Image 1: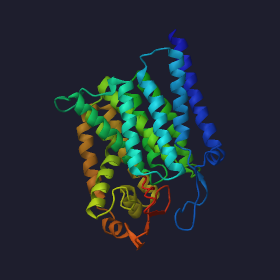
Image 2: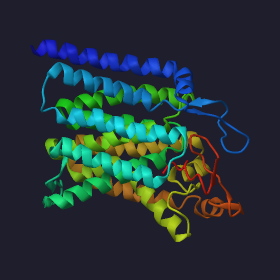
Image 3: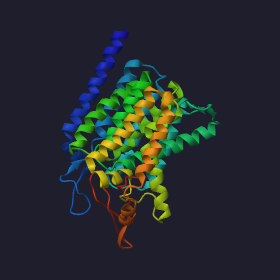
Image 4: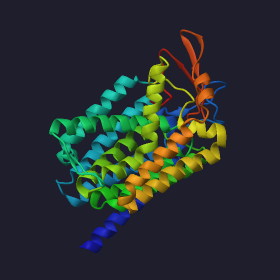
Amino acid sequence: MNLALDSVSGGMLFGALIASLVILFHAPLIAEKLGIMDHPDLFRKRHPQVTPLVGGLAIMVPLLLWGAGTLFWSHDASERLVVVIVLCGAGATLVGYADDQSSTSPSSRLASLLLLTAIALALDPNLLPARLNWGSFKPLSLAPWAGYILMALSMAGFVNAVNMADGQNGIVTGMFVIWSACLMIVTGGSTQGAAQVLFETALVAFVFNMAGRVFLGDSGTYGVTFVFGILAMRAHNKWGVSAETIMVWFFIPVMDCVRLMVTRMLRGQVPSDGDRNHFHHRLQDHLGKSYALLIYLGAVGLTSLAASLRPDMSLVCLMVLVAFYLSFAWLGQASAIEEATVETSPKDRRVHQTGNDNVVLLDNKERKRDHS
C-alpha cells in the first residue's frame, strides 16, 4: 500500500513538473490569450521584448492540480490544508491576475487578502495559532482574537512585502526555491508534499525568469506567496517550527517593506507609491545586477537553510540578518531619495523603478508597479 502511495505521489510530482514546463514553453501564447503580456515602451518599461506574465501561473497551476489529485486520491476529508491551498491559493492568484490585466487599487487587493485569510481559517481552524512557539524563549499564549489579528496582519503584510520585492529577475523566484527547500526540511505530510511541488516548479520558473522569457506577474507574487504564508503557519502550528526560524526565512523582504512604507510616509508619499529606494535597487546601484542578485539570494539562502537545519541557531541567524540589512541599507540613500519622485505636474508623476527591469509611470489613477 505504501509503495502504491509513493508511486502516486511521485507521479503527481512528475505531472506537476510537466505542467509547469508546458506553461513556460508556451508562455507567449498563453499570456496573449489571457491578456497579460508586458509590453516595453520608450519610457515606462525597459525590458527588450514583450514578456509574458505567466511565471506565477507556471507554479500555481501545477500546485492546484497536485492539490486536486491529492484530494481525489486520498478521499480524506481531514486534508483541510490541501483544500485551503486549492481554494484560497486560487483566489489569491485571481486577485493578482486581475491586477495584471488592469491596475486594481491597493485597498481592494488588501481587502481580498483579508477575506481569503478569513476563509482559510474557517476551512482549517488548525491554522489559527494558539500560541507563538519560540526556540529561545518561552511560548507566548494567544487568545483566539489575537490569533486572528496576527494571521490577518501576517498574511496581508507578507504577500505585499514579497510583491514589492519583485523588482529584479530572479529575486522572488529564487526566494521561492529557498523557502520551499526549507519547508521540505522541517515538515512532512501534505505540507512537505506542497513544498516539493513548489520547489520543482519554482526552480524551472527561476530559470525562465533569469533568461527574461517570463515574469512572475502579480498572479504569481500574490498566489504563490499566499500559499507560502499558509504553509509557514502550518509548519509552526503542527511541525513545531519556531517563530525565529520563520522570521529568518522572510526577514529581508518584510523588513524592506516596513522600511519603505515608513520612509514614504515620512516624505509625504502614499505607501503604495513606487521608487528606487528598495534594498535590491541599492545593491544594484553599487554592485551591479548580477552581484546584487547573488548577495541578496545568498543572504536569504544561507541563513534560511542554517536556521532550518539547526533551529537552535535561528536567533543567531536573525541577528546576522539584522546586521547585514542595516549595514547595506545606507547604500545609495541620498540618490534614492533624490530620484524617488520627479514631478512634472500634479496629474502626471513619473517614478523610476527597476521592477522586472521596468521604468514605471505612475499617476493618480495608477499606483501599481511597486507592486504593492
